[in-house]
Each structure stands twice: as structure tokens, then as C-alpha cells.
Amino acid sequence: QVQLEESGGGLVQAGGSLRLSCADSGRTTSTYALAWFRQGAGKEREFVAAISWSGVNTNYVDRVKGRVTISREHAKNTVYLQMNSLKSEDTGVYYCGASRPWGGASDRMNDYEYWGQGIQVTVSS
Picture (cartoon, helix red, strand yellow):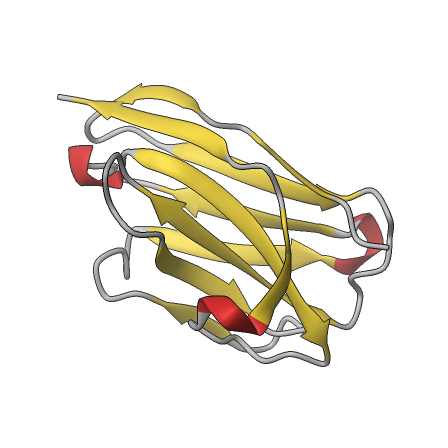
């Protein structure tokens, strides 16, 4: 089974950086694409970044391109989201998702079958 848990969130000032981590304690995500979505207060959950099962392909929403980097370490069953130059608009709950086996870097929420509980990121101005 897949069990995802996010870590690394918190409060930062605008222009600062955070690195989120998401680990699969079930150690079953080697062939799964992994992604980050976020949800601001009163808003719909939106795609942020994704990485294919192999780690070769990545995908980002235009809003964060150039400021955010997604990466993974298969040996640790972990995906990371490095966020720089943070803005107040980046505030929200960040969720880690895992796709079905052999997934690509999809931006579609329904392509991700497993989810973590989410972690808060707050950017103050």
C-alpha cells in the first residue's frame, strides 16, 4: 500500500524559501509518478508540479515556473518541492499525490490515486 506524508512546511516571509518533502512509508512508489497540488483558503485545489515515475520528465504550472523545482529520490521513496522567491499567493495547504504505476508527469488531479494529508505553507508580506 501507499502511505504518503508531507513535511517541511511552515511560515516564511515573502521572498524566502521552503523545501517540502513527501515520503512513502509503504515503499511502493518506485514506478509511480508523484506530484504536488495546493489549495488556498476558499479556493479549488490546483496543480503545482509533477515528476514522472522515472524522474526524467517534470511539469510545472506557469505560475511557479522558474521558482519551484520538483525532484525525487527513488531509494528513499521521497519527492521534494524546492520553493524559492515565495509570494503571498503561494500560501495554502500543499498535498503530495502518487499516480498509478508507470505514470507520467500529469497535471490532472484525477491521475493521482493516493494522497497525503497536506501541510500548511504560509507566506507573509
